Image (cartoon, rainbow, N blue to C red; front, side, top):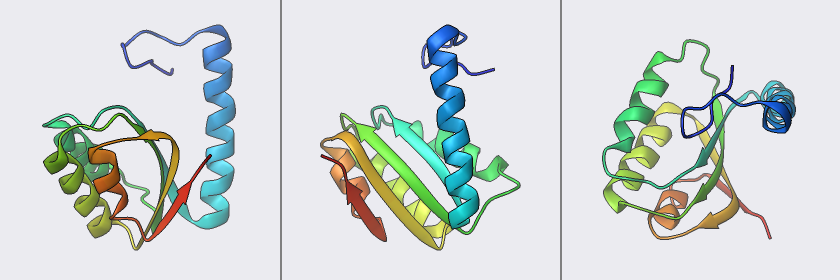
Length: 119
């Protein structure tokens, strides 16, 4: 079951899109030996602890990470802490800026081994 950011269950078109995204992410993950994360939110103070917990619970972590990032920004300390943790966790960090990447998001991008910016 997929949940939206507001905790509601996804239905119809949203669920179909999420399923397609999951299939594509799985194919890329297998081909490039990487985990894929999608960050589409603000980098609010304290959010780093949610990310830490998520990373600590992963049992099938791969060697590299592709992070798809869209953010309106947020707390620069939070961005710095998450970015450093990702650098410590993965050998190679590729960040794809897929939309807005403002404020603290730009600091986050400095941590990338590879940076890809969409139109």
